Length: 623
Image (cartoon, rainbow, N blue to C red; front, side, top):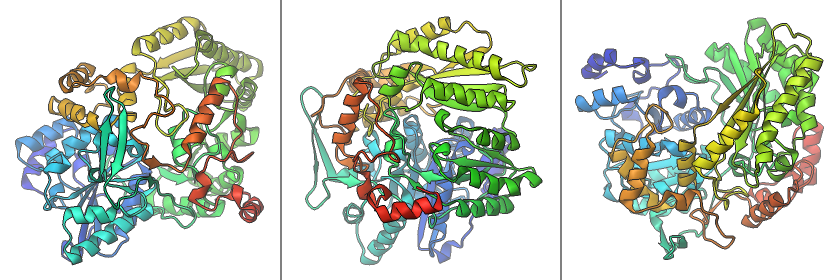
């Protein structure tokens, strides 16, 4: 360790964030590797180490002979100031080497409000933030994560975007880099070759022009570069890499537990949900593989908690058998099993009993909207009867705490829909009064609302976001409608959601705004203690851009969107048809009930289009 760090660490919060040396971290001899990659997460250690994707990619790359992948997380402002004062560049935890010394600096970005931290981490390492200012001696800057499917605001800072799931494409990209080193390619030559790998998007090879009204006129690739870049997926989840022997943090993190990924994708098609469309098609992992991985992970880590992870856990067909298999191991060892992401229409007494065995203290459901009309408009496919029946099961099972999640500002929402949230929560309360088996402790019903953000690659990608003032009016309307003292109401602050809407659907001109805000002190914008909306509004003004143009404007059907050259496998025509269905409050069946021809089946030999595979999965209880 740098002797200067030994003097710094006693002066900062949670110094274990910055020391490395955790159990199971990968150490390699620098003289025996020919490619070095630092995997960065633009938020603090506690959040980054809770990310399963980071752990997967760390393991995938370190299993490659001759490759050493290390980690780096955004230092908290107190540590940043100490590093800058001591002229210590931002470093990787495993070796202590500056990020500048690596072949690749990879950013795992899952949230638009982390963009300023990306620039800050590069600057702290002495790496010019703009790609045009970096010569061949600098690392390749890579960015991946769900929001990078529409990452144009970062186009001026990133060399390569990795679109979709990274296990396979990352290996291909690194092998190509090795080939380029042998052949003496320049950085630009490497980038042109990398652009031929499916799933890699090199923004410098695409040129964007604009109409006089500010909308995108055209996105033109250079000669020989693909006109459309399609995301990558892992087809066989059973054979996909899973980090059984994972790093055990030296300090407490947000999700300090074993995480088992049941499947990727979602059958439901909720019209607001970017992840549900971007991770299509559904690919389950088999029960037996999950049981084996869960048990081995607990043995390797010593964790006393396990979470079953997916977009909708109750849609996993083998859920009860999986829970039984894991609980047989967990119960006698006092290991807690968590089942998040349960749907109100897939909840049963059998699942309730398993949750009780897992010592679950409360149950969470996400009706998303307060009336059936609006739930149909967003294609939630959950009825009031579903929710109340599930709550009855919860209360009859002895649980007296329910959390209900909703959104405000959904397309077609009216005041009646807003008040409907209060009415629905009140019906949950009366269900408890009627069916609770243990009323002595009282009931805790928590209603939470977030500010709806229209996202790319959803049927609502053309929709305007409501104004912050209108959102606050609806919050106040709901507050006044909730009169039952057993119902607690929490709501999300609108400021960050407004900027999220700006950057989620933004073009590459916003890069200037991000850089301006960062140079004026913006960082850790997802943290309320550091976020400053006025600083951002000043940056927009300085750069001559109107944030309302991105957040509050309805797009037309034929408008070229900033992400029109990116494909997640779902056809734009399908998204538009779903938008039209939303305005009619017409639901679309889930993928398991009926294939609606979204196009994602072209990414693999989809079971809905392969009768033989469907039969095999049904025999195994999968699909």
